[in-house]
Structure formats: C-alpha cells, structure tokens
Length: 125
Image (cartoon, rainbow, N blue to C red; front, side, top):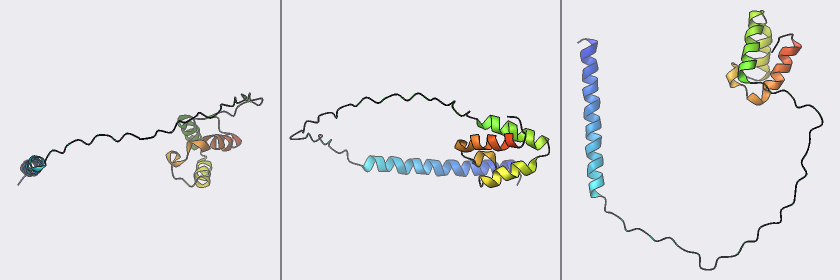
C-alpha cells in the first residue's frame, strides 16, 4: 500500500471518529432538559461605603540620569558581535551567570547588567 492510500485511509478514519463524536454530542444535547433561570439575589440591607480620604502624593523628580534600558535585539546584536570577535568565552560566562543556555531564557530585567558586562569586555552595544 503506498503512502497516499494510507493517508486517505487515515483521513477517512479521522472523519468517522469526528462524525461519531458529533452524533454523541447531539444525542446528549437532546436529552438535557432546559432549566428555569434563577433570579439574582438582591442584598437586603446594603451598607453605605464612604470613600477613604485621598492624600495627595508629592511627585518625585529624578535628579540623577535614568539608567539606559536595553532590548532583546540590542543585547542579541552585541552578543553576535562578541561571537564574531571570537569572544565565545564571554557569552558562555554571561549565560552561566544567569543560569541560561540562550538569551531567550534570561529575564529582560537583567539586560542592563548584561550590557555592562559586554561593555566592560569592550563589546559595543
């Protein structure tokens, strides 16, 4: 029997299974009795709730420059450059530090730390 005949036999078997399941589903739906809807219960004595007083919060203005934020693509590109420069030891060290085997397994929160490690090794980001 060639592969095409086997394929069509498998398709036919799957079709029979699906049709059988559809018949079972229809017979189950026919045997279920409709239930009468239940009216929602209303609270008898609602308790009034007073909102808590709102205390204005002072807005904090940062005085130090914000840390640069890096994306997956930026870190991946920098690691690719490191690999092209023969620095696979650096990449392995980063993966070991974060207990990962790929960059996708590293939490994006750690990208800034990875960027520092790459820059310290002379890799441009």
